[in-house]
Image (cartoon, rainbow, N blue to C red):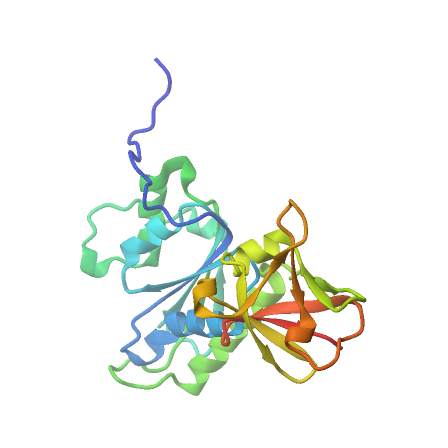
Length: 267
């Protein structure tokens, strides 16, 4: 008889998509500094993160932490701490310390925290549970209901974000598109599939560049991205948008989260 696990996850039909790094902020958004984790996730979402990074607001649903870890190569959890240290103190709990957590037994859903979730996740997911896990804890000042985030907690949150960007986030690749001498903007097939699956865009001029906004279908107007080849690369005629053609060559692009558009710089 082959070796068998003590349990088997029969269905992962609703498992989250795989990712290189899962960043999860835990805490109660209604209780002052305890909102630090969820607010950090919202800040990162607004700033934008590299591809391969998945952001999750873990809230107070500790059991959801275990399910969200599926498919993640690395996991970082952020939460508030009340240990008697000066507010704003930052703690890093490495993976080898987390491996010694007690088993998830005798727990109640109302007392289920991220540490219980990690133990539960090891039991539930078995070999599918990530082993590269780090927890950042920020000492907080006031967790009274209805209070705003204190300056000390805000400073701790900023420190965690700085560490994430420096040590955990992959260095973003500088993506480019090509402007031809004939005044066309060439977009690769993968880029089009990622941002403009309908093949139609809206265009907005902005200083020395343009913003390309996805449009659901040609029935809603917009500019058609014309096929260049059988691979699915596309082209946009820039004179439909600009008075003069920009200089030819590669042009830097980035996805603007707040505008929901692809920014193309012509400098």
